[in-house]
Image: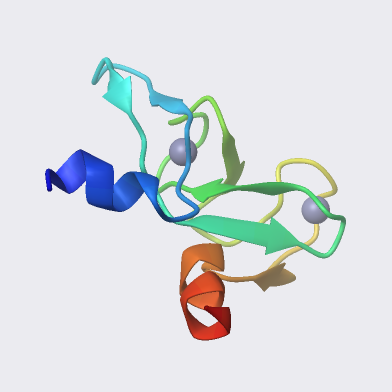
Length: 78
Ligand SMILES: [Zn+2]
Ligand SMILES: [Zn+2]
């Protein structure tokens, strides 16, 4: 099984990283506002980015109000 196929089983970011021309595959987190996305070191680094390096939500502006990573939660529930 390829690395991509293994990762596709989990809840990973399907956004695209700017400049890298590839899928993000970052871990997903959920904010208390209900938005789900990945976290990136730089702002606007992924098309589905939700959190910045300080865990600030892109949608509602809350800081560190996240659950996740969601794929880890899924693994526990499986
Ligand atoms: Zn992403
Ligand atoms: Zn939020």
